[in-house]
Structures are given as structure tokens and as C-alpha cells.
Length: 157
Image 1 (cartoon, helix red, strand yellow):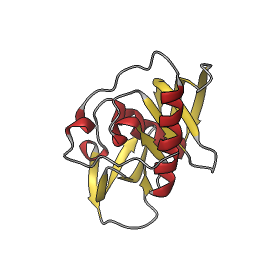
Image 2: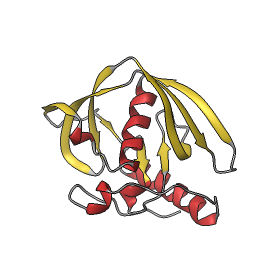
Image 3: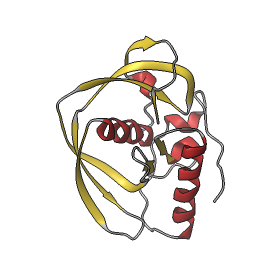
Image 4: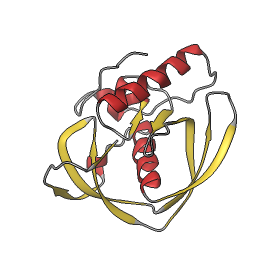
């Protein structure tokens, strides 16, 4: 595993739409391992491949010390809403309140090529929404309702 360099706000790759992963090969597996290590090293709870310069539909999420790798994640349903104070590893020193769905229904593929459909709520819904936005070239700052003071304990993904 290796740490990858984070792409920061202003880098054009963060505004591009990611491509679907057709083959789960060793390169994808190594990328996912590197992304988990990079996310953990930077105290994040989610990371999308474009944040490390790769335009592939791959995200990693870790809110309970149990990292999930989600290949080609697609949000099928959204319900409810919650406002949460977010930050982003690619947008350092900025926080803001963002409206996100309370619940999601998501389909994705794991590293073994198996398809999963899950229902999420709360923080997991926030992080998946945030990361899927990255896959579509959208940053949390595009959705901020109110900018807030930078502080510790903010959701950074």
C-alpha cells in the first residue's frame, strides 16, 4: 500500500465525471488499498478516486473502523433530509452546512465482483452522498447552505 497525493480545490480533475469500472483487476484493488490508507492518514471517513487523481467510479468509506470499497456506486433512492456540517479532504480549511438525504438505497460492486444493494441512514448516507458527488465532479462547497467556522470534529470525506 502507498499514500496517494490528494488533489485540492482548483485541480480540474475534481470537476470531471468519473468513468465506470468495467474490470476489477489488480490495479483497482491496489488503488482501493491506497485510497483507504490515504483516507486514514488524513483522518477522513470517505474518499473518492478523483481525489487521488483517478477518474474511476470508486469510493471508500469508513465510519466504524470497517472500510467499505464501493465500485460503481449508484444511488437508487433518497428519502428524508438532514443538515450536517461537512468538510472535505480536497477542500482544506473550509466547512459548511449541507443538506443531504437521511436515507439512501445504493447499489455497488465489491472487490470480488459481487453486486450489493444496501439501505443506509444517518452519517453513512451523508458520506456516500458526498463521495458519489465527487464521482460526478461536484464538491460539497457547491451545495453549502451556510459556511461555518473551521473546527475539529467535522465530517471530512
